[in-house]
Figure 1 (spheres, rainbow, N blue to C red):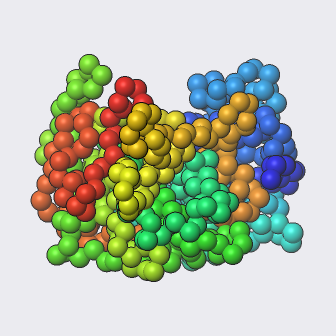
Figure 2 (cartoon, rainbow, N blue to C red):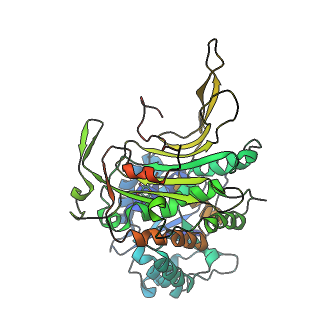
Figure 3 (tube, helix red, strand yellow):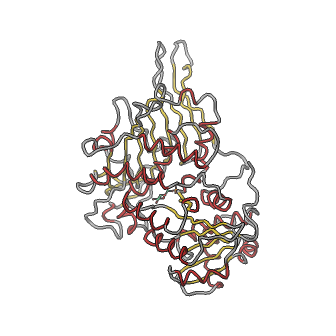
Length: 483
Ligand code: BG6
């Protein structure tokens, strides 16, 4: 369906944490493009932060950020966009936040682009200042991005703090993977193709591998990352979402609640990991010095801001098993890591072997997000020659072609928020189920150390211990520039 104007006059987006990295690198470039495409005409954007500056200084700051991060930046487009920007400075108290009242509009979204410790106080301050109650015909929404807590207890505490003022339907929990075109394609491809459903089950699928590998290291995020680690940073949220979308039952109709019910059902059906089965279900790693593309990379423990004896995992892998009729006996392997051999992100479904006389490789259907966006079917065809022999061929469909218009995850999700579409946002029970599932892993990993792997490698050797006999991880390293 073609996107039309998400909002007109009378809508205000307030970004709390307006001077931060998220705002300048991702939110503003997304808002800039939506504006340029004419999708948010009339939207007022108000920055809110502690920095004691005026609106001109804020506009100058955003101008510089857009010059750097918005690919289509021109002075002319900036002129059109700049006048939509306002700025208010203050602390996260009800009294200060109340200074936003003169800018209040009937329809308001509050985006918490803040450090996680401030999510609760900000939600509370907005509530106490009366921003949760819209006038007749209006609405109020609160957008907040992961991490939603650091474990089950802290997630529940955060929920309680938010729910003291906001109703669940007003809260839009953002996982930017759900705004990615390739993630949304997973849903469309699954449910818009008749041939897939009959084979999308344990009778035909042997294993599913969900990989998100990065060549980047911890970069400038030592403070956050050394407390989070790969399990909290990637698996609890992004990969768990891809997992539940791949495994869920077909929807009767597109509806945010039905979709989220189905995802929760998957998470609830995962066999519990226990202290006894932990080693078979979870592996953690940490990079040590290594080489990639002719360049040497330092060990995680030698990165700036990281403790010399840090036990934080920079690689995490999980083996999940779903105890339901569709997936009984099919392992879902999830893994993500930093400083790995390539930027590779994919959901790969391996089908069972064919019976009979012709020996053939198992089929794979791969939804690839990185390095390029494409769907690939690894099939078998006859090897030219006198014998009846099969060889594997790759049928590739690039996800986007020609001049098709794509939207970034933030563009997509900001549009959804303005339109009030909660389909691609997380309901609290999804967050809760994911934390509950991982609690034994987090607990088990309180002691011991991760297994080391060299920067630029495939990850720790020990990741193989979770695989069924006959299963092997798909390579992360590019073979001759392709995968
Ligand atoms: C973030 C993680 O949520 O997702 C990062 O905190 C990770 O560690 C990033 O690099 C990956 O997202 P993308 O959009 O770059 O694929």
